[in-house]
Image (cartoon, rainbow, N blue to C red; front, side, top):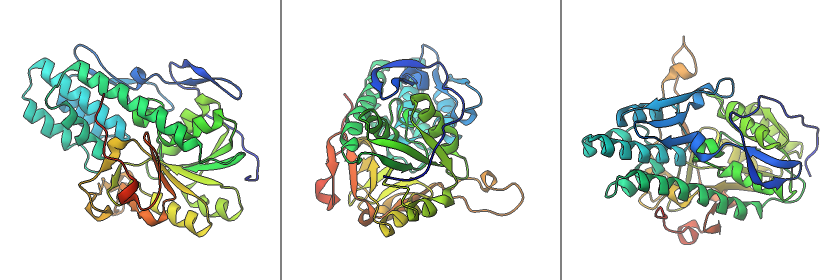
Length: 346
């Protein structure tokens, strides 16, 4: 479908494992869920995403406050992944005899936009055990596998896919939402290449999505965020697939800053814009995107010298979204009717 030639580059993934489902060019290599985030006897251990792809460093968080700091400082990031980390943090607090109300409040305040954070803590509140946290983690990974299969059905053969930010295993605790969908479509022989938005200002696309796609052997190329319009106009994008940090009851969707602009461009060029996210990302208490809190981060992430405004997310109106895909299936407008209720962890 799309035109042009792509070469893949970057470094190999850390501590890779062989997945038992072959891709078109052999067996896929991906991180295990426990390599991304896990609970040990005395700490929540996370793969520090701030240092990837150059360094593979595990950060040991020995208190719930340290887990909250890891979430706030983006050592672990991605809506489902921070929910999983928070669940492990609350379980750690229970094991260590911390005040659980204080631990809950500290973890819940770490980042405001992703609803999965509070959802996971609420799931843990009445059973803050390591077993419960592990079950929640496993359930999120399984949801990703299920939604990836549904989303792959929306990818035409020979597609050039554009994605924004990172919604792979790193962001979800294993397998991935948007990247999981791309992976499933690739394994079916439907994907020709992936365009990876660099994702300013912290380069989650250029650092993390490219890193994961390379490990999976999926052809990809990083592009500057501003190149999306050029690629679409040239006929080099067949579908846009992104994740989400919170989805309102009407289908308005919050995701990494720049997503809204992509949706507008896709609408103009008549390119399907697809959101892939677990039902833990749904927030029926938010009637529309106007009810979603938008995190604003330190302007120093953009410039060390000049004043800056740094919203971390934007909201894509439901009218620009062709489909929202969850583990339940493919949902289309009107989303207020078609979206399911949020799942409970296994």
